[in-house]
Image (cartoon, rainbow, N blue to C red):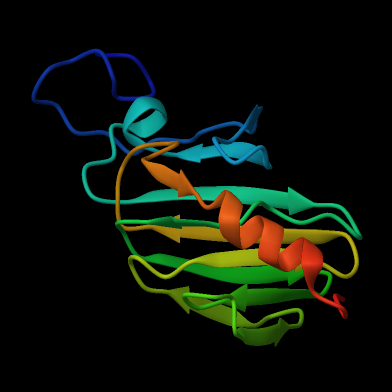
Length: 144
């Protein structure tokens, strides 16, 4: 028998449990380790938990893959679009889809617990930070 995580026997497929650990993502956010190529030999998907404290936000960024999220607890606002011109409020239980190449910036109104699913298997895939949109967000007269 191979390793219980299914990572040691070549060609043998196993179901995998990943116990939570934490890491800081490329954009500085706090994630709980989830399912990825590294932790569970995922081939086309990754799933992680994101924790954002009240009043904090992730930097403006975009990526080449789809992301779906479910807000488990809290409330947040996501600014999105080429100039962050759109604003969507999310409440507990809401699902939110982010297509590839769409700049976005989430802001936690209260402590937020979010489950993210990405259409790539890597834990921290190529995320492009957008400092010019971060500056635009910081200059907005009204921010939640």
